[in-house]
Length: 434
Image (tube, rainbow, N blue to C red; front, side, top):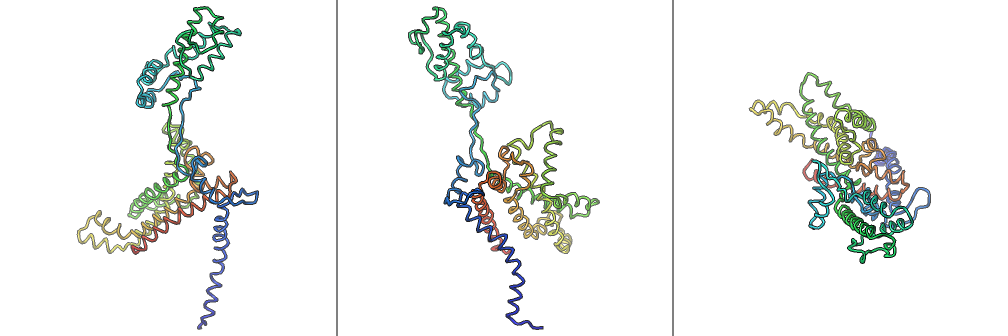
């Protein structure tokens, strides 16, 4: 039966019409609305108000949003309003103080304040102990009106960092107060105030040099780290597993089931499995209590968990690619005297280049869109442990912070971050004929 040309077009349109309707309803319309909301301050309750490029500027400004882009966090280990620490770790004393202090006077004063008495500790000397100085001061002044007035004035002087008293005639306090004390008491007070002044100078030294700057990767930095580990490690591990599973080993079917198990498990189940491993098993085995809660380890651990899950899916792709290679190639190469390694690098790897393309492309896209693994392992503490992905950050801004317009702007940036590398990658592959 011959169908007329007009009816062919009609049947074709009717055939694709449901797909077009679903694409428009679930893809095109939400994308257009996302672009519209990205230029507003919509919070889900009040009517959206146009704000221009404010959302895009804010997300790349670390002073406004410290969680999206990489930034530097300055952590002060000591401040001048703290009391002097009774002990300082030798590594901190050496690496953060001695190595960075260039002023000889500052270094001499620090050596007067702290003495190394143990292999790993520096001890505060008795003369710089503020509690002991306060005891000496109260023994002289007592707790009467004159003593309390002097203590109040001395506290103000010390907090302002005024110079030490070199004599009663240069005393930076009210001279009338000193008339109430004996000559011996005045001399003792001058010594105590001089010592307090030195204590304050030591405080300024510690506050100046005991500073630790940390690089916060943010959601963008963590997503890039996750993508690099996932693309490289997951593909390499999956390929090696696939090569091993393609051999006629005794327990091949059992091993295949073991390696392919994460592929059929949900991501949230995998997250809970790793959560149990990191919180219950590893602390008992290693003696280290904090794993996923450590900001230095959490990004790497989440990336490893994601790579383990992705590698099991990639094993299927590489197994299919290995089984599609005709055995005639390897048999001919073995007849010609080629060894196993020569067959592997000269036949197997070149023929699997299109499969590598699929694996790398798939792992790259899924890595940039990761959400379930990071959210399942870190939950709401991801910002503390530096393990929040871009999608998770968008989710938190929208549904926890009720900043839907701001989240829409980030979603648009994520769309461009996924689309541009994908387009470049596909263009290169098309030029090479894959």
